[in-house]
Length: 329
Ligand SMILES: [Zn+2]
Ligand SMILES: [Zn+2]
Image 1: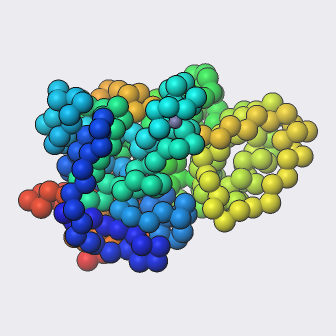
Image 2: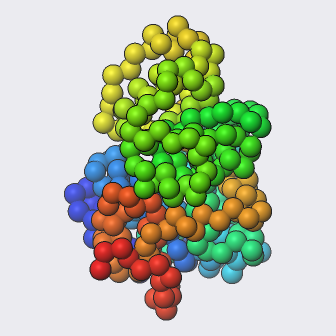
């Protein structure tokens, strides 16, 4: 089968054997995959990953010995596969298992391939009313919804979102559905416009007044976003941190201590809730900028790096005609 792989220096399409599912795992034929900022970071050395890239996908279960009932069904998959034996796995927190593998990120080949394997327990059936082009957003949408799992957000809560990129777009939509009033700080007016009128107020390249929000969500990926978050949060407020800041930055805890700010790290989230939100009518498809066949996967990753681009998809069905033409031709 074809797979888009990274060897530590180069991304290239390779022909590799179809993987064999381990006991308890399913073999999934990928239909559509999404390019995420994490994929791009990996190709710059993040996580030291080598192998098949990609972790956002929707596909069809081809084979699953432990759950014959899902064979032939359309699924999305949680990306962390825990060992099933440790105390974290016992608590249902396999995504924090120290021995986990992560699809296309850590020790497990990913979704930019014709087939992938994942534990059957990681798979979730996609409701019929959610098309592939929406279902492919489940993983990042779940990450956005994780904020609401970690922190009770009241209706009418005024939140500042820092960053209007791939994840920020979904966070804005998720918080809006919960009745939050969203303001956005971003350098890009173009990206804020992709939020379809959502932000009550847009701070474009200019930070809001200090201590003005009880909730600040930092999803800019840049250390400047962190500085802006610390300045914008009210005393006794909350900062939810989504960026992993691969470049590192200077951390000064003093303002957090003085202002008694609660800092919450936030990563992967609940797939069932994300599927419910999509099934209930959230449509993220306006975020799709381009779709490429896997054979043009290298170009797809380049496209995803272009300024202003939110979502690039890679499709695996060779007979599928893209509905969105690449921006560059
Ligand atoms: Zn992702
Ligand atoms: Zn474990």
